[in-house]
Image 1 (cartoon, rainbow, N blue to C red):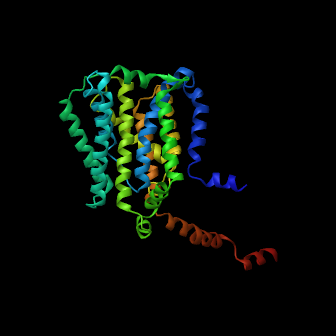
Image 2 (image 1 turned 30 degrees about the horizontal axis):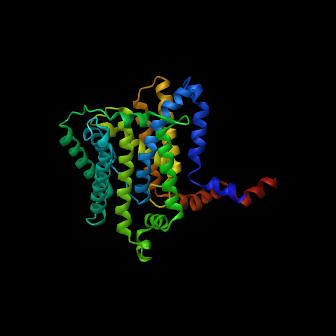
Image 3 (image 1 turned 135 degrees about the vertical axis):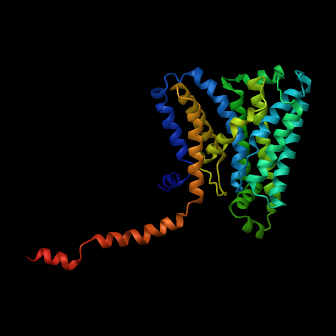
Length: 342
């Protein structure tokens, strides 16, 4: 019974139920949306979104919000295509450059927040602008180089019938979840997100954890960018723009609070699966893609409202004002007596 109660009270359960309901009604809304071919074409996009959303989850658990997602993903796709220029032998070096760019990007955002007191929104927005500037500098505004065949083949291939992108996303989820739940580093990470002041009093290096979080998030975006480049073959200079709102929406759907603290990257991944399947259903119904943007924006708006609403005042009103109104509407005892005694 206690296990059932914990599941009911967990903020991460709702997305599982919502996703199950979505898949159940999908054939009714869009015929063929659950066919094998449709699912296999949808899962790689859900996996890539899930990987990018891992980074956003980590940042939100630290009371931040990362707007550098589009810039980091786009720069990663450009590096992994432009540097090798079709040469298979240069792919490992290109991946190393992507990792280096992620470390630099995450460090800039982290230091701007921890050392200079810039809010996460402004800091990551500025970092994103720098990344977009680097993209324009490298490409001169034109991206026409294709991904090396080996990387493209790997991104498009399947292992035991499962897309490689899904396997990579699953591995990333397992590693991140294990680190957060089973290691001292993970427990310190959660403590810093829940209360930086208390973590600092406990001797935890808060600034180092925050900077490390933005580096880890950038690495997640970079990994997603590499897979996107392999999947699309010739990514454009605005490839990452489609991933900012979905990563935030996936985190909100997964139940991670925008106020920081505890979260679940697995629930976030389920949220990414929900959004991707929802997009497929929306397009299958013939609705414009703008509907999906409206849905994503609404999800984020609800999440922000849940964070900023004065719930303590609502609870106080419910506990004190509402009972008084109910009492005032009840007939007085003397009136009841008069009614009984004609």
